[in-house]
Image (tube, rainbow, N blue to C red; front, side):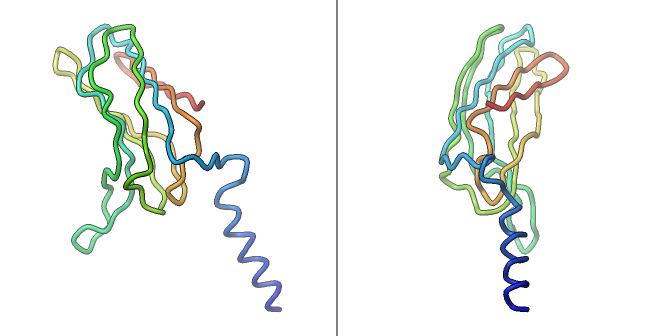
Length: 135
């Protein structure tokens, strides 16, 4: 009976992430392409995870990659490192501002147990949407 329980427990734990999905990297490259028709400034990609703050769990930005300014129809690259990432689930957040003051914000993707599932990400920022491609 103990063996059955142990086997079921191991199966449940292993099913959280399949070996084919986990790339085992401690960093990923983020490429951001600007198709908004206007220069983007203050371009950032954050890791967002549930963190205990003042006794309550809240979404917090635990790590980031500052990409900076991207001219229209250009692509820039940043890298997310596992410096402050906790061993819990989370996702990503892109933020940027264009010359007219319009803010872009897109939450996307998934981390499981603090591990990157992608080798890289390619984001295309358009006037009304953000497209995401896993690399």
